[in-house]
Length: 246
Image 1 (cartoon, one colour):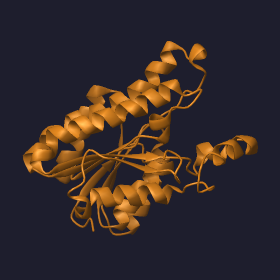
Image 2 (cartoon, rainbow, N blue to C red):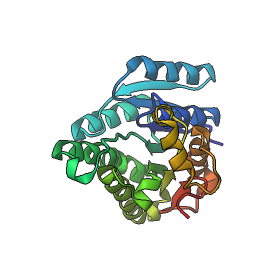
Image 3 (cartoon, rainbow, N blue to C red):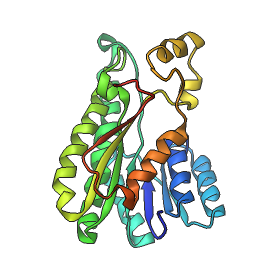
Image 4 (cartoon, rainbow, N blue to C red):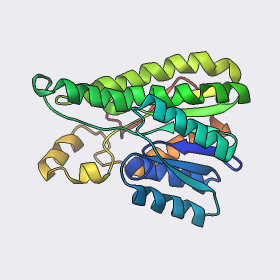
């Protein structure tokens, strides 16, 4: 499905990003694994991908850093010659009630989640135009659609990702480049596993399917949007949330 394609996945050393990178490789793509923290974790993902017979490289970069993203794009294009799939997954949280969110915590979330998505797209934009092809998939969140008490900064950043997705999709559609967003709901990751049982039950009560999603659910959706099967889909937000946002 993705043979001959090269993908770059931000925040791919763990959680949803890790699963996206592995799934894209499973379907035939070579993958560049962006990480900001653990080089060891990133290299472990790369080794798993190489074991599938695909090429894999790791690159350290804070997506919030505009110039670092430029250098990452230059490295990716020089190393692989082309990038066909860009997945903007990197994100952080700094949860608190609005009156308690510091300016620094608001800025950190916006800089990584929203500006980071802008930064990577900006530096790959010309390459996609020159190719007259490409797939950009941005990770939003059910929180960016519904809002959530105690996550005003996160919700604002993820809602911003949706607006950015739709605008860039309009700009690039004429060159056969698609831009879509995936909005995960309550997904089983290290972050959700750390929640108390009562907190988990409170969230589950809001999900019509009454179950937690898996990272594979998100990764398979991203892989579909990255493939030629989704060639006529652009500017859309696909909620993968067990019905939470309907």
